Length: 125
Image 1 (cartoon, one colour):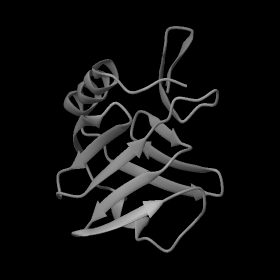
Image 2: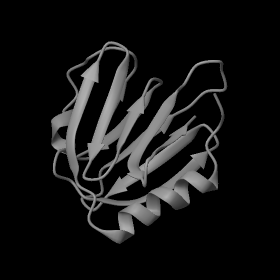
Image 3: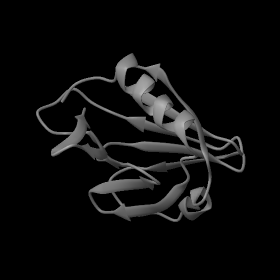
């Protein structure tokens, strides 16, 4: 779809600063990597890179043996852009994930936020 921008970074950082946003679950599937936080989730369809306990891991379109469960119950500290195709979320522990997007006709990353009034709130990249 489209590339990342400062708008999504600011929105994520708003959520991270309002109330603690812990990782409630990580779901690995053949065609998706889902991160469920307390109030929102992120569905990733491109590459997800992680630094967990000082080691690097990569999810790329298939389940793997990385210790993704170690991200569970970790508190997100801040979001930032490494580039327009790479969004980084850093956790209090020092661990981090980098979420990739791509310019294409398909959705790379979908952010599902809580509804506002009677409207669904999504950001699609």
